[in-house]
Length: 61
Image (cartoon, rainbow, N blue to C red; front, side):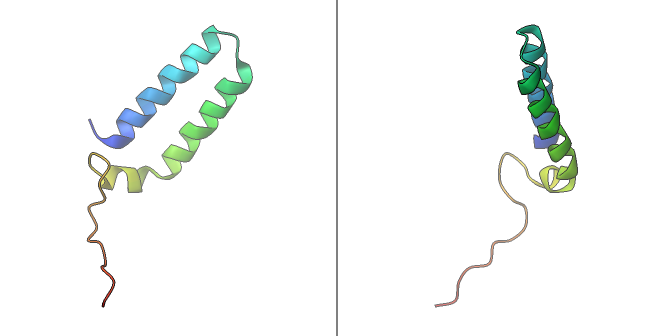
């Protein structure tokens, strides 16, 4: 499971808990976070286990 799918699954679980506990504002914010995650889907899919696949540019000394 990649980072994106894992994040969406966690957010969905958190939203269900917020709904069950009568916290509509928290559920709303979690929905917003899911939308933001979907907007960054490409970036999140490129990353594996929290590491960026792009080479890092080191400062020249």
